[in-house]
Image (tube, rainbow, N blue to C red; front, side):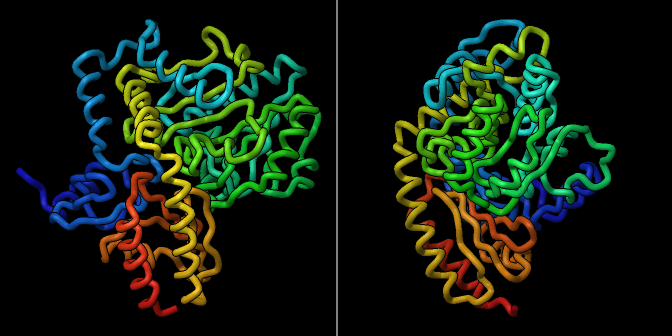
Length: 399
């Protein structure tokens, strides 16, 4: 029996822990840049599963590999060698930097792995343990990654939090220098803060951090959970910065095109600090997830997605800036590739709700920042339709 929208909502509230504030629609199908709700209404999806569905919904090559691998081998555990996992690790290293990969299931798990690696490294070089992260950052919801997250609103009610984390101002190198002590072992930074409002790290800031880390034997960890896999126009956001490579990079979200997978990429210099028994993941890098990851990377190359993101993203930013000039309550439009924000001086949630009513799905973060994350396969016509809806909504807001 098909369930109508009201029944879906009723059963959700009855059987599912109420940890999410959901949009008032029940999605049942997706194709390309569109999704459909239980009543058959069609929406342009400019959230893309929060930067997960970079290849859109139900990309035929992703669907094919899921079917093929599911009939071959789904799971064995990491007690055995599996070919898809090795293939995916090789692809990631060839696309990023020389080193090794640890597979898990999510961004939080990848960041947990990076934190454990940093602590293990610290024990080897002098009992160093402190990790510097950025104000307004977001690294996950586990206790360690929650503590690494530089936003108290996510931490409230979960104390006592793990020790050993410090926060510094984003894009402020002097504040970063002040936070370094003899106990500092690592710094974790998002090249672009996603949940924090699409704040972009300045090139000179990251270059200075890289130089300090080199001189003081501090691990430089890039959280690319949201920025990785083509979102910014490069396969990984660090590649937008000339001659700058992290020691560790964490990935998840778009790596599996909707199938859960996370990864920690560790440079050669630090790849031996976690050894047998130090860390593990039952489902991490299982054949089904790894095969999907391989297919995702292949499609990005075969369909020349990165060049499209650069071209379409630049045009979209120009059009959004033009739109923004019409409305005094739009403070700024910023972004890179197809990771874009429109900062407002008014509440953003009501904009989002009206956009949903008009058939456009976007997201609001920090209360007043519209986060726009369309699939990377988005067309110019679909962007024009989104701009038309957004313009209509903004034009009818009583501020």
